[in-house]
Length: 473
View 1 (cartoon, rainbow, N blue to C red):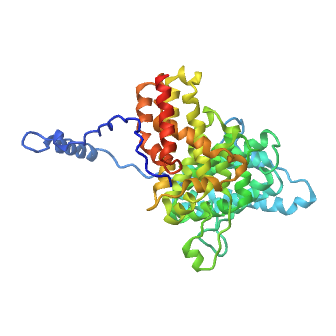
View 2: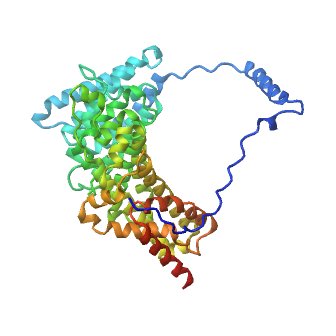
View 3: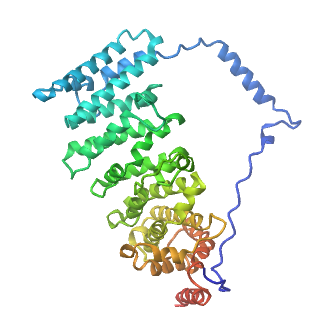
């Protein structure tokens, strides 16, 4: 750790004043009563008494309507009609034809007599399990277009119908909290249909609809079903396929967005981070490394993803790591001690900050884009500061950076010193508007804290003097 330095820092502006707290006295009369609010509540009660109660929706009718009438955007035929038109003409497809046909018969039988709302839960279970069998048949026969429209239908059912989200996971003969027939089929589908170089529009179509379905499944996911996603995120082959640079950039961004949302769920922190769950260690279960951390770090420094159009994509990566680090002290310790993560985040901050001090014309001409960039820098610096100083003792940053893989990070120390020297001592570019300048000024202390971990006193003086010379010149 670098020694203490007496070098003066660039003066920071005073902290912005906090907004005043809400004052409930604004709602009161002079004697402290709130008769107007009470009067409004009483009026509302009187109005409610004159309204007839609304009957709860008949969800079985809605299930029947969606299954029979759903049309995927861009198509002109109902999904139901397209899926029933699937042909199985080869001799080796006889069993698949039987399973496919019987699954549709079960669905039609379940949604018949839709006015019998009392049987809705049983109906949903039958329909969900039948759709799982249909997915399995379509996957086995590589019917990619049909899989795409089916996932769009399932996303609609999952989004609009209660109970369907929990039922569509399926259930094994010996159910476990972290097992799901549907997730296993999806894992296989990812490897067989999305793992090869692009097969064209149909493959991209399937990938887009599959991710849309996964997002629908996650939304308002019950706690008891959260662990079922662990089969997906634990698999190294599946995660490396989904996060491959061979995938379209928009696809990878959507995958990272899903991971960022999943990282909020503490039950998944062990599977996502590949850190050993202490409870599972006692039970004798070992964690399998999925290499998600390393792959996401590579996306932070990948030249393919440089540029303003990828700022949001890389922001999702930082959100993912931030949520994981908050999930459990063991996960935080693992992430904060990972050299490639520290080096990648610092590299990312350098990539963001460089255009500011090189007077990028696109930023000069667009104050809104410049402010947005400064906000990205701000959040990234907050995250790396938390990662370094969040424990009782700050880590040895220089030692960790020297442990990072040399090939992509051979000049990481120089890049780090230049970037954080600017954030600590350099005046914000004079073409920045006030909001952006204030945000950069507010990063001074954190940037200095981080810089002092690597640069010792005399060298800090030299960096400070260099920016004073720039001001004079």
